[in-house]
Image (cartoon, rainbow over all chains, first blue to last red; front, top):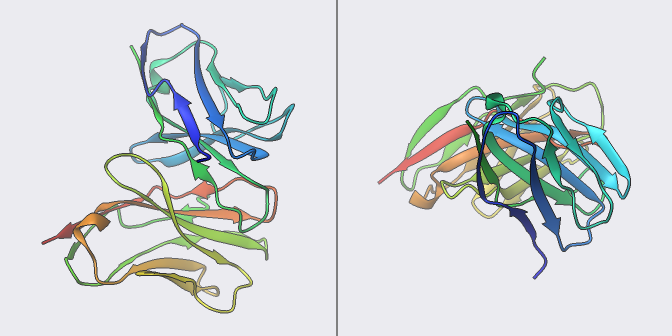
Length: 114
Length: 114
């Protein structure tokens, strides 16, 4: 079955370290998204991509970067982890950018920055 | 300004009763889509229902229905015959026009009481 996976599922790191969260989807979807979820804030968009070599900044992109070298993967990198980046991170994908297109979510990665 | 507002941080409902979760949105784009997602305690994001701005009828999916009031810019989720398994966080989200990511509200935590 096609799916979207995230790794690691849990990560503890120290401030200042570079961290990369992986997202892999087997639906062959063009569009991929990264959100963070924090209590009281819901899900906020970090970065998104509408195809290979395409990346766009979301609402809370500072301190994060992404690159899209193939259809299946959109890794999220925290250049220098900060305690404010402790959060649950969700990757999502959708087939197209149509109005009705549902975004399918991965299981999430819990990141703790000490 | 908030694009999606969910004014109820938490709600309680008796098992087998119906419950309405509120969602108001803000957009000047005539073409938009509204989504509801469920997030149980296990953490995954589950798509429930979709309503397009041009849809004449309110969307329904099993026990879920969307009370779409365009003039009031509201898209409330109605869950009929609540079950214990409905206890979860519920997120309202909107896409404004094509080629844009979903923007989420802060969520409502629903607790179903036996």
